Length: 622
Ligand SMILES: Nc1ncnc2c1ncn2[C@@H]1O[C@H](COP(=O)(O)OP(=O)(O)OP(=O)(O)O)[C@@H](O)[C@H]1O
Image (cartoon, rainbow, N blue to C red; front, top):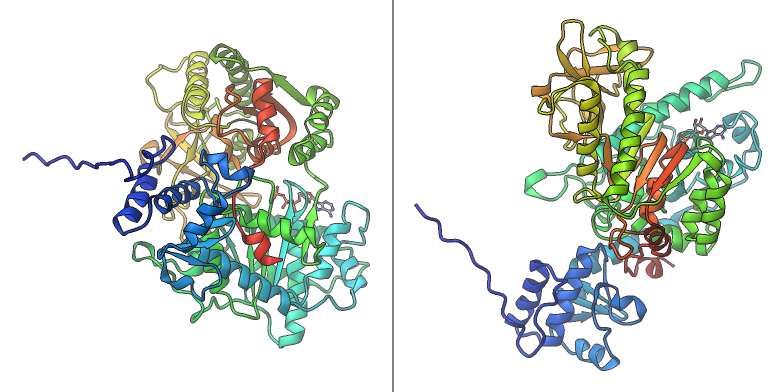
């Protein structure tokens, strides 16, 4: 039976221009809906642009000023804004619950109603939490000294400050780049809070850790455990380290995705926890907060007990959430402007080669001259490969593929590794953190999919693998969807190895807590331990959704670090993907050495283009 094809008719908007080329089908539909419901052509046009701006992550549409034109819209005149005010479908900001209208006007911003409600709710929660926070009492220097083993130099000072300031706070923001000690500081902040709250409430506080992705939640608990082990190792028997209970308490915190923390109802929508049924936790830590969008932060704030402490941790300069808003950046911007004590920025990287740090700092500030100087000063730690076309890319990939092959060989990934040889498997897996190609784009000539295919083709040629063989020893893959039963998360990277029987299996390092993987799900069987680490094997047929991992997008690499990273930008300097945050996120993944495969003009565009998502949040918080 033939099913009639559905057709959509996009008429010209009556009395106005045709839908602009930039619009998505959704934007045009919003505009048509407005016309169909009696709105004026002006409102239809603005509503379509508001929908379009939301598609770019803006919480609101800027009606005038320079930034209004950035998506291609003609800025509104004062007369236009006056006309919008008179539209029955538009409420003015401050009208109670915004009158139930689909749009809200708060010049220079124009909102789709839901974003207005989210933004005002987040701002109200933030203001209330900050107002209810207690000023830090007298700083217990001895306690802070004990937590930091007496370290107090310049690099550690902001970490100490965070630990000193956090007691009594209902909201605290900790931001900093990779390796600046966020987890180290969170562990100590938690210990301090546990001590304070236990003394005040005569009971140990309940702590929950949440993150936007399962992988990020997993990584934080893993890092907390590593940090605790280092702390125990440094606790000198001569000094009184009476923090054992607090350390244990911090490590007992349950970690999960934010969706699970809120009790997502899945397909049915909504969450188990909300204002009338708050999350039963005294302290909630949210890691990778830069990836949290406006709606999620609103849901979380709605669902917190009034007296709970919320600690947001993340790198505000990284790429923002894939959803709407840039809440961490907005919060940090507003709090930093007022030198607030409930925000601490960590800037010293303990992990990266110190010659790479000024590069990251220059990108963060968008300072092209400082960037060029820092790159030069880094010598052979920072390599530029000019990239004008696909031939340049092919040359760079040929060199890179050779280095990847050498890395796999050195790590033993191409040899037979016995199924029970956890040490051998883990050593091979470690190779995957040595070298990584990071691409601005996923698709197209300069995208990760193409680069990965080229690297794999070259590797197969070198290793004598038939071009059509999908699996071969040394192949790296990345999981693209959470699979709780398998205990694998979106973003987990695995390596194909051949065992003593000639069978191929894909190995992953997984985190276990007392025998169960994160979020309380049990792990696939067949795992073994080695020195606190554990690798699990999957047959090629049993692997959850995945893709090749020799080249991944910069987006996917957030939260990971590599000894050596190469960052590939598309050569077209007009490409919309190019932004300062993208370049920063890519380059700051490197610990020891970084390569930039980019045309000068593309790099200049990236440096000069900070992503500023339109939002009224910062102004509402102040
Ligand atoms: N105060 C400190 N003294 C000594 N070493 C430190 C200190 N703070 C952090 N480090 C070291 O720096 C490294 C990075 O610290 P940590 O993991 O806490 O940073 P991070 O900001 O959470 O990193 P990322 O988010 O990139 O994983 C660790 O090896 C840690 O031991």
